[in-house]
Image (cartoon, rainbow, N blue to C red; front, side, top):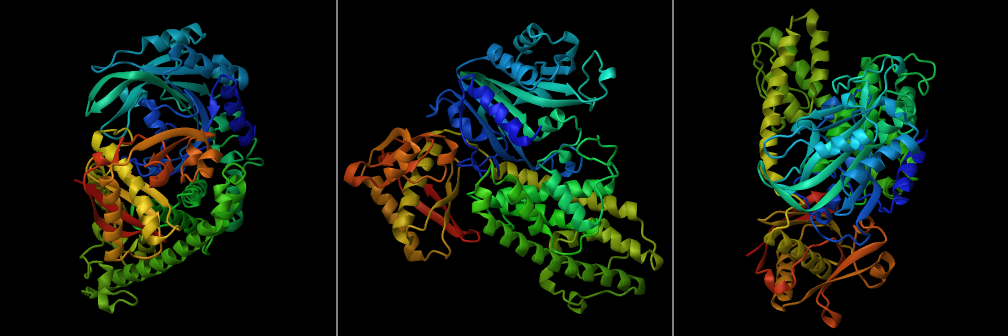
Length: 633
């Protein structure tokens, strides 16, 4: 089965069950400070899960672009991915568990033809906050799933909740399919057996998170089904390796061509199951996955280039990790843009923005690769010079190292022994990776004897300390969440509309929103503009926004189709998120209409509720994009 057929089968099946198809939202979330990227199909729909009325109705379906970086170290096996497509359908306080599970079961058994004797399910086992999900257990039993194949699991496996402090949540029930030898399918479902592959997950949102480890019964019950396209496609083709499907195989073939190596020794990889994972196969998977993810992030309509900040840093990390693995399998030339071309051609029929933003993707991919190869060259000189000087017992000043100056920040001495923390310092300051450090150290073994295992362990300890610090910082930085519909968050949401309109008046009509981030304490707005704003321009924007606040302008909402919204003069880079019917929020009416935007809401009823607007900072966000941080008082 081809990916386009499976994607369409899913959407058409649920459309026939009364769901309305909506397009994929941006990979860069709107007004959600809890995450850097859209991590699931439900992420852009949280306001509607909390009670906002969606213009398309109470039943929706789509295929959503997603990025998850939490499993990045797991990429390299047959089924973990940084970028993936989430097939999903939703019910906003419409049908409940009985109908939801019946539809999921019918799709996989009747529409896809999977035999139910190879199915198993997991359910929530219950804890002090919520009871065992007996309701789902009974539904599965009625559908013919043997009780031995129904496994209650704890919260960390079968419960979904938002990354922020609040929002809809509830138990999950997942479907698994046996991919091992059909002669030896076990009677009892063991989730630890990797032959059982998850093919779908129904999140049953009957609770609302209201603080850390605090929950209440939700005002409305919702269903959120998530089905990973890549994994289900592999199952449908009898494969236990997602990279053999048509979503990845042309990319793998290009990597084979560039490296001169083969993915493995099987004669027909699309028909024969994987027989093991070599270092070459793992590197090829990482290259394919990471460049695919980087291409989709940069190719998004809100796409960002590589940088040292937020989403841009993730892009940089993905590209650089791909280059490192390219080197490991013998690719010594610039190759990332060639892979990006393959990915764009492969996926542009589904996601047209990739073709639209192709020039941006290719040029930034080339620039980042050039930059990193220079970094690698510099790091290599630092490492080898230090190692050789160490044999002589020299204390080295950075100024004496070719092409390395004190601003690089690497410690200006040779340790008595090569240590993992010293190599981590080189990695942190110059971006020189551990694998290449160890490779160079091994070359020097004839001169010096190094304890490679000790060095590697020390490096990993330093990395763990760094990651722990980053997680602690991120917990504070990305607090709140799209589900945060507090009074202040709603005020800031409205203030972003006023700010964007004011920016267009001061800077020009080339200004469009490129992203926003809202907490209870402040708002952040990213917008297209190539130059630093002057103090006079910043003051002008402040004054214009405060004038609109003082005018006591009403904020009104209308529902209309996309063409009507555009013809009315409404702005909206997020219109694809809502489908054919959209909400248009106007600040002011008639001749005094100051702002009109397509938006999901919610907003204040009158600008007089906002208070005083003050811009705290204006800075660069990425190439051609500026960022404003502001507060209301």
